[in-house]
Length: 290
Image 1 (cartoon, rainbow, N blue to C red):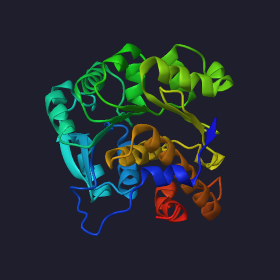
Image 2: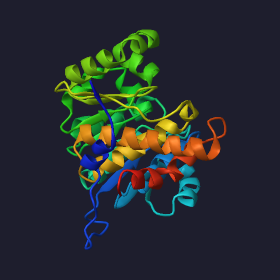
Image 3: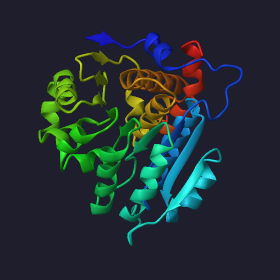
Image 4: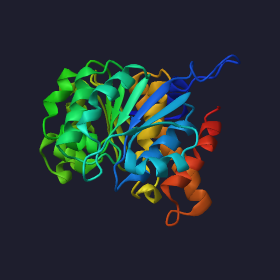
């Protein structure tokens, strides 16, 4: 098993040419959030921007649009139709698919919630989008109801489950997942053709072709709701900028942990927040030579 280091970042992060513009640095469509979870999309979006994406496009339900627009000035927003309880409506599928095809990558799932409408949206993106994507949080909880949907994908997919989400995906137990982290991640990657990022202490990154890495950055101060949203945004940003799926995943995990270590030194493990990790991404990139 390989270990992550600064070299994984150098393979996934590209130096910007002097004539770069937002159109040459990738665009990310973020499909995240619902009425009760506006913060997830905000943290994922801000993390993506800190990792250098050229254009962030946020598809959000109309009820949280004012909140997100007031928090992320740099994003383009698509206020979308919602269900009666504030979740993304399946009536948006055609629009989202069209916008996905106009993007470099898609991030879906952070704070999305699980219902019949969001399940249809997630499955439609997987089946019909030809751009690479990151599936996180509730997108994975939707997929857990029918994992074979991943076999219908037309593009590279990165999944970012924590152990409980991984357990749901394989219809197993969290205890069993944690006892066999590397094998569990690799077996799922090999069976479904995705890159798996199994989060937790010593995060595992596994590819379908047998390559497995373990991360050695990060600390227990990152064990706070929202940290996973930050990671998802970082990985999706690198993917949208042109990195291959495994390289984007490994680099995002390493940078996420490194930024978390910087935040720990600044604020302490007890007081640090996921938003502090976002603010430390620039220092993490500098530490890797960017």
